[in-house]
Length: 141
Image (cartoon, rainbow, N blue to C red; front, side, top):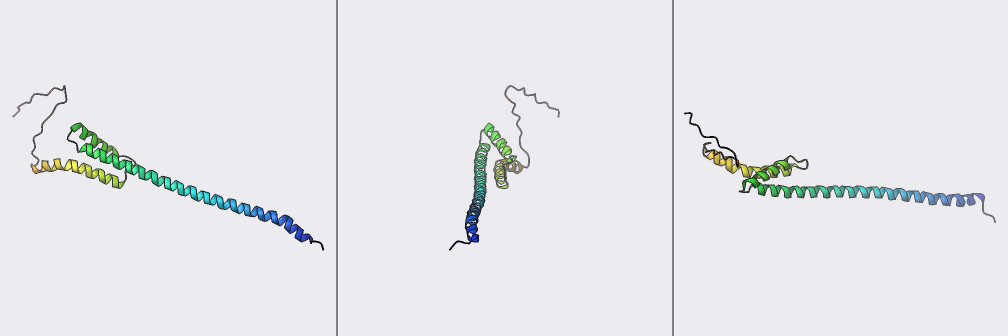
């Protein structure tokens, strides 16, 4: 008994075709899985970087607020300038801005309340910079 021609053709051509089709499907599935994995890794890295930036911004705000509340004038000026710069930063979000506003309000409000408590009448003292001449007071009354 001889094998029919159609069976020989099916075995000779069909087997390699089925193997090739299985290989193509495996490649397509693997690439799809790899793309999804890369997308997930990219998202995770982005979230990690955002969290890292937020933490660093929080540390900078804390440092600047501590400096701004300092009794040493130069440190306080530097802290206030740093808070101002952080507020203008492109990294600043609404939560960070609220922290900066609260820090500045706690520094400025005691002085404003003292001023308002005196009815706006406070003595102003002009302190000249080192080496500057102080003009003599004139009595034009």
